[in-house]
Length: 469
Image (cartoon, rainbow, N blue to C red):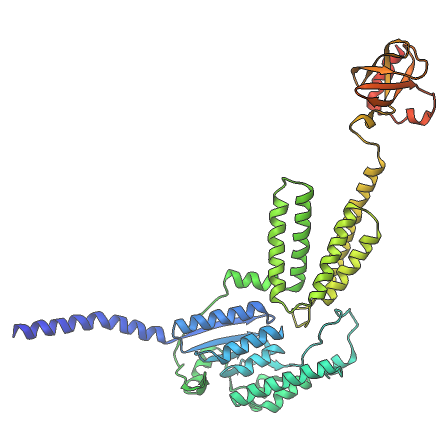
């Protein structure tokens, strides 16, 4: 009897211990993780989605809500995000929100790849035509007519890129059971749709006003997750929002190609200033940090290394111009820098384009600094030396005593031994013509080149007064 009571108490004790953990585990499983991508699709967006999918997997989340409001972005980052979504063990719900937002260009492809696609009222998607590859940045008012009509360029390379984009969006539409014909129209003709029309044409699964309605409408849907069918149970889930960390925020700033170029310039000139002014420390430290950040950002972007090489060559020419003024190097350096900046990106997307409004003034400022420093160096070359024996030539002296061809003079407040090739006597006005082994060679002022005697320093005028007394 006692044994039965002990066993019963032990069973109750074990159940009491296990029950809270079981409840906590169940509660932890009933969660939806949410992230918001607001802005251009780039390396920061790809990193944010990758970390969110990892966190959702670790939390055993039911779904990941990917809220989109983007004008598009880089193709490389878009493809990375699509690959992560297709391989995700956690279902991803794409949600274009808030009202007034859009999923244009790269955002359309990403929405097509999600397991469930939804939009908030007042949003739109589409305009997925690939942008031009390479070339120079567009000048204001220099847009071609085919861009206004939405027709892709007749260039063979653009035709290849467009066909590749069509194949991608059609394969995603086939995988998720969405309208592939309209997807192709969005690529070839830059077509766009509002939320209601997107629902009617089976581009999205439903329209939801907020996250609560989104989870209610997604509940009970069957989706294909990594090759396995799964029925979503999303009704009443707790939504856990993941904000981007400091590294993703930093990445979103430095991967702007204009910021990366400016960081590279700051890095180079910080190091140059440190080399020319040893001991300043701060310019070298700041320059090294800026240069490393710039190189890291450029490594993440689809850059043309010929353009980068031209930019580095231009900066090198401008630095040489500052130390050895020739004007030609300065103009060549500025030209190489601008051409390199124009060629830097292989593919430009919304939010990832070189801006003349930033690069042009940066190149002009760099050229101006080089020419300004060069003018100072050129002026310093033309000025007479300020130290050593050469600095004493033309200096007025006072004859203290003289006998034969030698004597003593007063120069710069000091008594010097002196000699002269011509006749000279105490009280004569004299000047230094040469210095040899601490012996001055002097001559009477006004003998030979009169202009040479006028180049003496005003600070030695006391010597002249003394000679007259």
